[in-house]
Length: 138
Image (cartoon, rainbow, N blue to C red; front, side, top):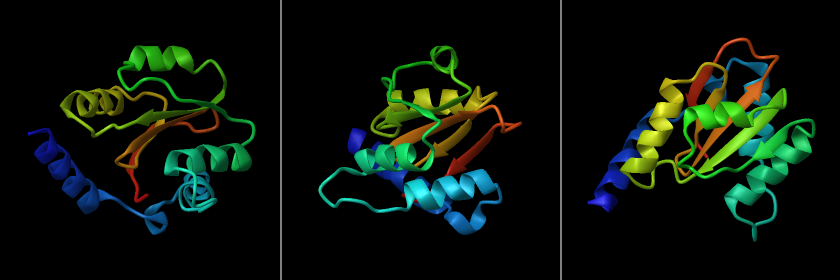
């Protein structure tokens, strides 16, 4: 049952996922090309590569990796820095995680949300004036 849920979610992800050619925001284009698409050491996991690339490309951002069960109000409290990136693991691993992610996206008032299927990224940047939601290829 859980396996079929994950397969259905992955099919939806593949259908809706976009690449750099659909991004119009200069900040998000830079984030996608320099952080998400950049490959590093083959021995490290994709998440480790992602965190390394964030720290290298955006050194002024604080990177946080809380538990997926964190709700939106707790995430808003975490963002005390003007520039924060929150990485959530396994956002489509099961229905509970998927529902948490969907609630975060639905309640979104100040983040750029990026769905990479295995990871969810929330970017809080005071220079960005309105929230946006993206599903991007990883």
